[in-house]
Image (cartoon, rainbow over all chains, first blue to last red; front, top):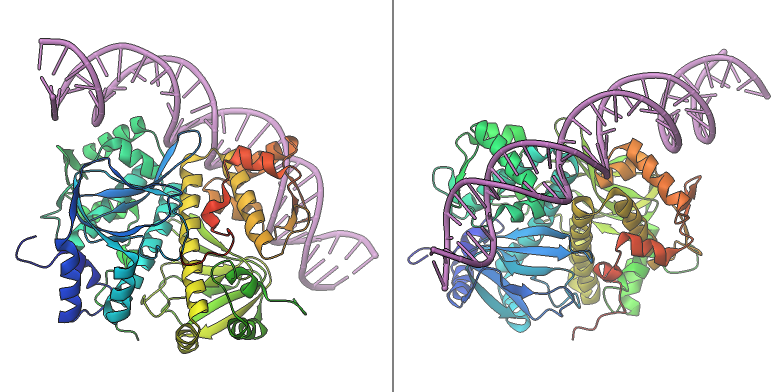
Length: 244
Length: 244
DNA sequence: CGGATTGTTGAGTGGGTTCAATTAAAGTGG
DNA sequence: CCACTTTAATTGAACCCACTCAACAATCCG
């Protein structure tokens, strides 16, 4: 963190061509981050929006709970991710957000955000990009949950996490931190925790995944992509896009 | 259609307070609509974006196909819906769009859209709203596919379609057109067509759904909502939201 | 050290799948 | 206008993926 560009800047560079002034504005955000313990709700379903959040370090998730208690995780929020960017448009949240691990998170109020978006066109564009990529991820998850087997699904999720974390420099040699429990994976994929355990065992025995102590390694990433039918284009991390 | 406000205007009114000038601009869009036959692809995965589409009449869907041929429908596009509004931001589509029934659709190019958004702030806001609601629907679908039983899932989908169509005046007395096959429903819910048929039979025998000749009736909407755990707030159709 | 999560494994069950046959409805062409 | 084909929907039978319930191991933590 010290010394180099924030994850936020690194990530938004995929969405727009940021100039020095843009970067300086963005870097200010990360320095204001506050600490939140794991399993803290940042936002609750039906709340009126108050802040825009930027996750600086850690992990969080967007989730919804049905009246009967079943939980569904509908997004992972990783370092460099904006959330609820357009709080001023909707009157209330239709989801909750909670930290999955200890995290550092910056909060901006509506005025600050509007000002920033109005003053820095490249940031504005990057924020749009970020919102649209969130939507693209949601679509891919829908495919995963609806039309992939649980083995393909888990493999796909790992491929996505690897790719997203790699984009902000949080992987080394196909190893990265997975700082949450199998219950979390189950609530993403819409399966039971018992089954997550079994599928994981199967992936381990195929030599595609090594996982212990919250550290995951993907020794044969191409083979895993193959199994998962993972194609990273939906993450829109391709070389910076001109407007052509 | 003749004589009254277009579905587009009706829908966007939920997202912003439109003035006379805004409405006039929007009405122009619908009059330029072209006819497309059922099962025509408007957009194909990996295409570079060319147009913004507005569905004026009919139905379309956004879908993705896995290499092994399994298909997943990730959105319904209904009358009054914008799609690919922010084509200038992403370099290529990560999904395809095709009409499910004969439809009338307007196409705008990037320049027209940018001009409109820059000139009419209320329309700009409404378009944002529309994009965010699309995302909210995607989240709810993920809950449906991941954590609802297939009976709840189908019921939920019907509740959503009813509510969305009702919002633009396309229902009468809890009856509306469902102009597509059970295969479509299967690809939305991530189940087999055979099972759609069975679940539908079950819903029929509970007296919650009547369906024939592409016309569906929901005789006891509250009971259906109950079964589906449907709560319409995610559609953000609540009375017009001021920016407070 | 005890208590609480978290993960693993077994056994039995069930929701949903596939395959296949049948009916019904909707085009199509002579 | 009717036979022919195609598409859509329904139903049955057998199977299987994933679920629940339950016991147990492992790890973490105060």
